[in-house]
Image (cartoon, rainbow, N blue to C red; front, side):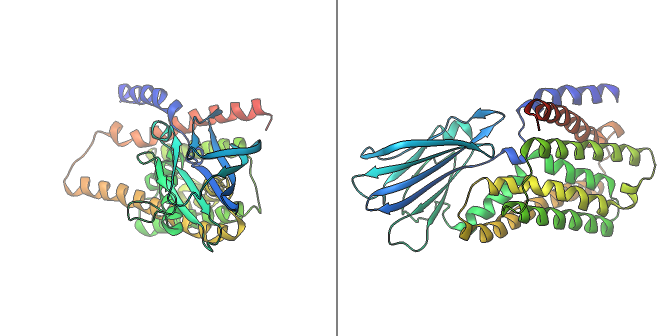
Amino acid sequence: MIRGVWLLFLCCGLMLPGVALSHELLPGYLELTEISTHIYDVIWKLPIQRGERLPLSPRFPDDCAIRGNLETRFQNRALTYRAQLSCQTSLQGRNVEIDSLRSVGTEVLLRVQQLGDSDPQMILIQPERPLVVIGQRDADAVQTSALTYLRLGIEHILLGVDHLLFVLGLLLIVRDGRTLFKTIAAFTLANSVTLSVAAIGVIRVPGPPLNAAIALSLLFMAAEIVRTWQGKSSFTIRNPWVVAFGFGLIHGFGYASGLAELGLPRNELLPALLLFNIGIEIGQDIFVFLVLGLKRSFHQLEIYWPRWIERLPGYAIGVAGAFWTVEHTTALLFSGG
């Protein structure tokens, strides 16, 4: 068992530095608003990941050029560029490409508002398809607002390890189905509340303390898992839905950052918030059903693991929580809060 635990520590030590928290997996955002014939206001939000600027840049048709000065500012873990783009002809039916998107692996949300169009066009530019055609509405392009925000919500949680590890911790602590339903429902309700108030700007939590708090929640969960192994009781074990609700409020702020930092227009924020939230809950439910399904399959097939293997998920939560707590507490101290 000791050898297995040390092997886990070694693997986590090699892998965790390259793993981003879910609210660090931000998409880029490109907004093109036609203000006069063939003249566009451009907003380009470039995520900052682990203190580094992602090497992404939009590429427009050759007859388009930036007019005037390029405004640059840093806000909410992203560099925001503002400029005016002048083209000889309309962008309708023409290509826009995001350079280096394939190698970086993130996505870019493109919003295009043409003169005379009542509804903007939304396109989720994906790494495997970094070039899109403005105005093209084929079945292969992810373009509708509903699908875009829903997909972003699902990917935001499924690609982020921190929230999934916390949910996994709840699954390891809670044994009976009724209590598990109440616990997951409480976690969902809590993060939906803070996701909503944070995304619309009622409450803002800075990134460094938020990251540290989420990491501490994993460390706390790991300690409670150890208590269940030892046959001990605690407030968390007796009332897991209360603790899930409390920490769900914190995790909700992490969910919100993925949507709030896109800087969407106010009139689009509420429907985007609803769909993004639904996507998050779909992704969370997929994860819960997958874990429970695997557990049930092992039981029905009478597959029994050594105890140290059964406990590896709990150790993984503890190792990840400890690593991220140190990492983000250090970042918080050096950033001055």
